[in-house]
Image (cartoon, rainbow, N blue to C red; front, top):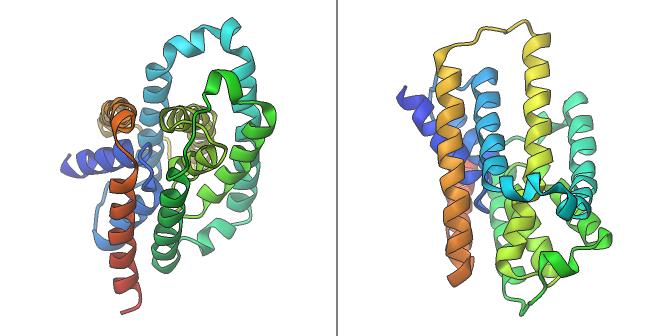
Length: 252
């Protein structure tokens, strides 16, 4: 139960903060002997985050008539990462880049990129400036998040800041982009569970979904309020310290 709590906490917090959830989960698997870090638990954690982001932006989603053009752009922006991600998984290329050295370097490099992008003086808002061109630009940047350590939220926020979107609007774009992405990850994960005949479903899966939902929802709420007043420097500092820590141990 403690393992499920820790994994849910890591998934819920790191999925939406610009620090990379996949790298933290890989670190857990490398430095611990958690017995509950299975495919079904991993899928359950992602489903919890998926439900959380839908719940938080529920009013925007149900107001489809008003936001139909926005969600068309979000869907188009999500296509590159879903297509390329599927190809990387099907060809097993993704397995070759899931190592500590790559995670260490990407954590450092893209942390510095986040710092640089966050320094721009910007004033653009989603309602007025998110067109198809900018959505596709951010969408192709999101493909980089398939590399562990990059951070999906971090790279999409960086791309939006490069396009001169306000910090809060950049985060909202990132969170909205997570809806189709997390949905695709959840569906693909369930497909793999079915194909592997690993259909065992337990109370731990339900608890994983619930805890991941709670931590994810609270993280989204906290992060949006935080960046209304502060910059992203604290997350950059965390990434730099974490990256150096990972590189130290990976090169020992």
